Image (cartoon, rainbow, N blue to C red; front, top):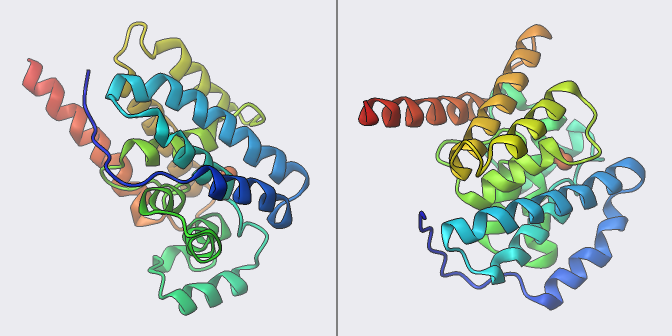
Amino acid sequence: MKNETYEHIPTSVECLGKIREAVPSFLSGKRLIHTFSVEKEALRLAEILFPFLGIDRKYFSDISAAALLHDITKYLTPQEQNKLCKKYSIPVDEESRENTAVLHSRTAPYIAREKFGINNTVFGAIFCHTTGKENMNIFEKIIFIADYIEETRTHESCLKAREYFYSHAGKDMDLIKALDMTIIMSLDATISYLESTNSGIDSATIKARDFLLAEYALQRSVQE
Ligand SMILES: [Fe+2]
Ligand SMILES: [Fe+2]
């Protein structure tokens, strides 16, 4: 068992209740269904991964909070997103200035912090849910991959990633390795798609993939 220690105060029951009640004021239709499905998937992943890492169940509330809030600025236009980036001095890659897929992940945690006083763990998980980043913690990894593989996703690469994780995790592969390999699959698919459409790729996405590739190349050479 690996041990990840968290000492922060988890999202309170009261705060989570307020968040859950408020989500439909930010999102509707398919996006609302997606949001609740991300929460369900993320909790399912936490149920498997937290005991393995020795993380207390009290932090499930952070998983729920991050999942419920991760897309709350999804409806805003790039102009509105950029206004928020200016207001909060949010760092955004040049490549992502017009990309709402990235911009909403950068603006959502700031709005969430202002409205609900979320802690830094929830903030971080929302911030990198689209791009990933180097050296993600387990909360960031869970929200990142739950967003990609939740049950209502129908894209082939999402279905493949979902099937990969649940068929390998804890069976022929260590849970964390299976999670990391699934994250690499999703990052690869995103990078290939962006390349095929001649779109800019956020540097965080490249760094996230390269970090994991290096981590496992290193582990393999250590084992050899
Ligand atoms: Fe999103
Ligand atoms: Fe999402």
